[in-house]
Each structure stands twice: as C-alpha cells, then as structure tokens.
Length: 123
Image (cartoon, rainbow, N blue to C red; front, side):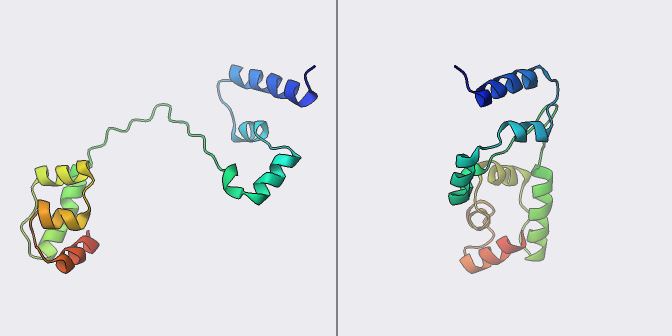
C-alpha cells in the first residue's frame, strides 16, 4: 500500500492544484526534505537551491537602445570621440559585443586597446 507520507503528498498536491494562489510557505512545506535528504543537503548544499517565479501579467517589451545610446554618447563626449549612431548602438546591444570590441571595431573610436578599455570602463 501507499505510505502515510506518499498519501499526504498526493492529497496536498491535489489541494494546491485547486487553489488559485499558492503561498511560499505552502510550496516550501510541500518540498520539505525528509531526514536523509536533509543530511545529503548538508553534505552538498548546492543541490538544494531552486526558484519559483510568478510572471503572470509581466510585459517585457522594453526598448533599451535609447538608454544605451545616451550612455555611449556620454562616453564619447568624455573622451572627445564622435557620438555613435543609434544603429551601431542597437547592433552592439543585440549582438552582445564586448564594450572594448564595440569601441574598436563598431564605433571605430580608437585602435589603442588600452584607450578602448579605459573608455569601456566608463560605459
């Protein structure tokens, strides 16, 4: 037959599925480890981490290019370089190009790696 703990977990999961909202404590209680699992976690703490996120109703359509353009323009002004175009900044942001490489190859501000690193640190 089914153990008491297995039956409890089955009933608890069923009641949580029927709920519209679940509190952190309810989820934490559901995943409470038994004695042996607690001992294993003591030996290997990284195995116990996890996260639950509620993303209902989150809108993540954010255009960050204007913010990046302002930051890059401030760096250009500080180092007396030509301001970058919005197209170049959008390319750097979308391609994930390192700042030093962007300064050297995309914006073509300087070929001096030390100067590129200094400007990148200010960004």
